[in-house]
Image (tube, rainbow over all chains, first blue to last red; front, top):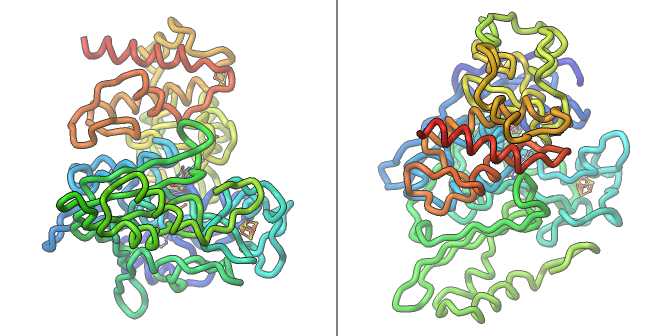
Length: 307
Length: 167
Ligand SMILES: Cc1cc2nc3c(=O)[nH]c(=O)nc-3n(C[C@H](O)[C@H](O)[C@H](O)COP(=O)(O)OP(=O)(O)OC[C@H]3O[C@@H](n4cnc5c(N)ncnc54)[C@H](O)[C@@H]3O)c2cc1C
Ligand code: SF4
Ligand code: FES
Ligand code: FES
C-alpha cells in the first residue's frame, strides 16, 4: 500500500476542505477502498474518514425519507421508516454482501463503490482501461459471466455491483452532494456516467465533492414490490442479475410501474422501455414477457452470458 | 484516544496502513483472530467493534481509535463461552480455523435478532422481531465460510444457544 495520511472529517464542510487536498480520497467503511488500496489499484495519499458525518434517517416534510450519507447499510435496512415505507430498499440492501460488510459499509460508499470486474482488481496481471485508460481490456475474450449486457462501451464492460442502488433507482432517489459551489441534488438515474472511452470516470461527481445524503420521495409503487437476485451461491455473492420492481394497479390496469436491473450494466439500470411497455396494460404474464423483450432488445451479451 | 481491545486500552498505530487484523495478531499477540482471504470474502477475521460484527482485514486500525474491539479472546475471558461449548457439543468445526470468526459473528448475530434486525430471508419486513429458524441462521451466518463444511453443526450450535437463552 502507498503511504497515506489519515484524518477524520468533523462536518460536511470539513470533509469538503480536506477532500480538496491533492491525493485525497474519502473513506467510508473501507470495504471497497481499503481492498483496492491493498491491491495497488487505488493510491490515495490522504484518506478523509467521513463516517462521522450525518447518519440520520428521518421523514421529510414532503412525506419522503432522508438518509445521511454515513448511515450504515445495516442500519438503513433495519430502520422502521425504511421497513414501513420502502421495504424494497431493505430487501435489496439485505441481499448484498454479508452482515459484517453491511455493518461497515456506508450509504455514500455503497453509491461510490467502483464499477468493476475481477480484471480491474488484478493490477499486476491484467490490462484494464478503467485502471489505465487506453491500455486495453483483458475481460474481452475472458471470463465474462459477471459483465454487462446493457449500456457498456467498447472500452469497458464492467458492472456496478450494488444491490442497494438498484432499489434506489426504482425508487427515484435523489443524491445530495456538497461541493465548493454549495449543495446540489442529482437524481440517481443521472448520477452514473456511461463508460464511453473514459470508464475511469464513473459518476457526475467532480473531484472533492462529497455525498451528504439521499432523499427518497414518496412512492406509489414502494408497497407492492419485489427484489429478486440471481447469483452463483444462495448468499454472499454478487448478482448475476437482480431486479427491483414495484407496481400500482388501478381497475385491473398498471397505473404506475418502476423496474430497475442490477448486475447487468455499468450502473443500476432503470428499465424505462419495459416500464413504458407495461403502463396501462393488464398485469399478465404475456405483458411482462413483452416488457422484458422490449428492454432487452438492445442487449449485447458477451460470450458466456445469455439473455 | 485509544483502541480498547478486550477492555484494555491500546495506542493506535502510527502507520495508518496497519489493518485492525494485523494490529491484533502482529502487535498484540491476539492470534485467535484468523487471516483467511484478507479481502473481505471469508469472515475468518470477524471481530466485534462496539459490539457489532465487522471484518478486521478491511478495517484500518486507526478507524477503531476511540472505539472498543472484542475478539474471541475477549469472549472467552470468563471461561468457556456458551457458544464455544455449543460448538464443541455439536461438532461445529473440524480444523477450527474459521471458528473464532464464526463465534464472534454468531454472538453479535444473536444480539441483532434480539434488536429485531431483519435478514434477506425474513418474509415480513414490517414485523418487529424475527423467529430464529434454520434458514435465518444460514442466511445471517453466510458471511463466515467454512472450508471443512461444518455448517450443519454450526447452525445446530447457534440454535441450541438461542433456545437456551429463550428458555
Ligand atoms: C466480499 C464482498 C462482497 C460484496 N458483495 C456485495 C453484494 O453482493 N452486493 C452489493 O451491493 N455490494 C457488495 N459488496 C460491496 C459493498 O457493498 C461495498 O464495498 C460497500 O457498500 C462500500 O461502502 P463503504 O462505506 O465501505 O465504502 P468505501 O470502501 O469506504 O468507499 C468506496 C468509495 O466511495 C467513496 N466515498 C465514500 N463515502 C463517500 C461520500 N460520502 N461521498 C463521496 N464519495 C464517498 C470512497 O472515496 C471510495 O471511492 C461486497 C463487498 C465485498 C468486499
Ligand atoms: S471490463 Fe472494464 S474494468 Fe473490467 S478489465 Fe475491462 S476495462 Fe477494466
Ligand atoms: S480475512 Fe477478512 S474476510 Fe477473509
Ligand atoms: S472448521 Fe475448518 S474451516 Fe471451518
